[in-house]
Amino acid sequence: MVRLTIDLIARGTSGYTKKKRDESMEHFLKKITHLYLEDRGIDEVGDDLSLCRNLTVLYLYDNKLAKVPNLSQNANLTHLYLQNNEVSKMECFANLRRLTKLYIGGNAITVVEGIERLEMLQELHIENQRLPSGEKLLFDPRSLAVLSRSLQVLNVSGNNLDTIRELQCLTGLTQFMANDNQLRDLKEIAHLLETWRRLWRLELADNPICHKPKYKDRIIIMSNTIEVLDGKEITDTSRQFLRNWAASKLKKKEGLSRGSTLISNGETELPPVRDHRNRNDVPGFMMPGGASYIMPGLPKKQFEDILARSSSLPNSANKLGREETLGSKAHSDLSTTKYISRFSTSIYDRTPSGAPKRAAVIHVTDLGAGDSIPIQLR
Image 1 (cartoon, one colour):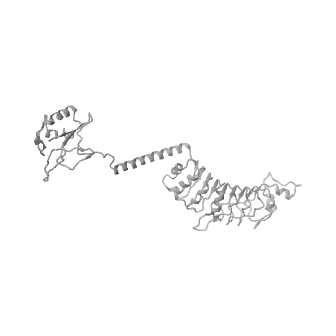
Image 2 (cartoon, one colour; image 1 turned 120 degrees about the vertical axis):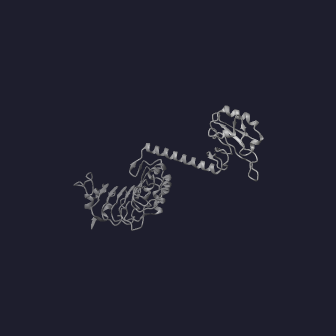
Image 3 (cartoon, helix red, strand yellow; image 1 turned 45 degrees about the horizontal axis):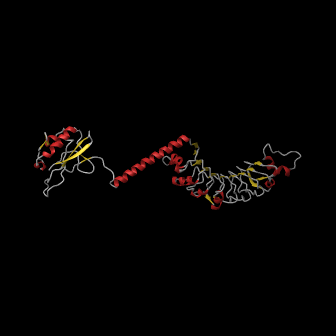
């Protein structure tokens, strides 16, 4: 059992603050601003520390303190280091109005509370608490409300947190460390980043969320301010590359979505498909919007000759299977391998018995000229 005494205090000062021979102990204690009392096995802090009225920085980490010492007489304190003790409750902070940095990680605290009057607190380090099995660190809403006005750095690593949604009110955060927790929801992080507009450092390593595809890339795209992610600096080049990649992916996705919408509304053309409805017809390729066929490769001069003579076709040409002279070439000639891709017919009307009632329109296309002219046979 080690109790803090005046002798320990006198030996806990730096080389720049040493007691002079003719100096009274009271005067010496009043001028102390920094005390280095770490790793001394201290388990109790008595009233002697109250004599250090001008104390601003107090190092009490790596001791055996079971509770926060009474520092009500040390109102000038700005930095307090209490890591790795046995503290189980946050208390005795009411008079520390000037405290800007509080290090209290590695204790047994279960609730962040009792700091409603720390209106100047800028940094809170409360990582790696020794929590009961299955429990997580909790936050008192009243304390969060006060912290939202001043807090810039928050370290909650290793506290079994599965959500940090309640920290949304901490809009002044510039650094947030939450390594080694149970965070899984990337959407929650995205929502918080929309609020934390000043954040430049984000630490989320060793969380389940880190196993999501392209986790780091997505985080970088979510925020324009993050400069350090999981200990690695984000360069302007990598940020711009990821933004361009995201924009290209979004544009492609919107294009596919628009195409699907047009097809479902019948507002887009379909690619040519082979028509199998009339096996007796001359094979060809069906174009959208009707029973017309492409016959590529027919020279324009031959096409004009066929068009000029089409008016002289006999009336019997409308009978299925009947071959009549078509200019200088018969229908059967045009159905040979040479012309099969340029010529086709389609039956529009049939009698009740299934026999053709009238011949179809012949569609001839000259790909060279880009014209498509129907020739109707009657």
